[in-house]
Image (tube, rainbow, N blue to C red):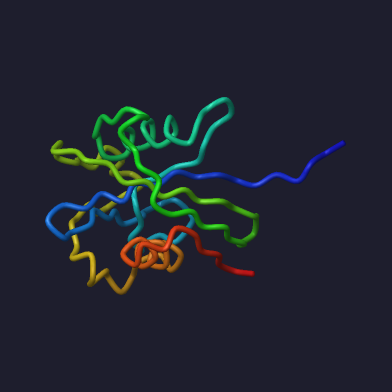
Length: 141
């Protein structure tokens, strides 16, 4: 029997001195030219925090262990597929770098309360939920 499947992704909400780290998407085919969080899909036989650790290093060069992450928000959303997004925070003094310039043309810090106008809409919702300490949200239903 084929069971219904959802796509899971892990995201990093990295905040320092009231600023949040965002990257601008480029050449991905999805929301290019808009700001998002460092993130990626969970792969087969990988935990959410293992995925976060791998993706964060691949995208911004920060090395974090799975135990470094704290889950702060979950979003269940519908686009073309059904998705569940897990948003984590972590503490790090490492300086992020753009390790994927072919997929990201800007990596910058923005005031947490003043996100760029061109922030991916569900990412904006997740960040706003995080600032309100709202653990769960839905979108697209």
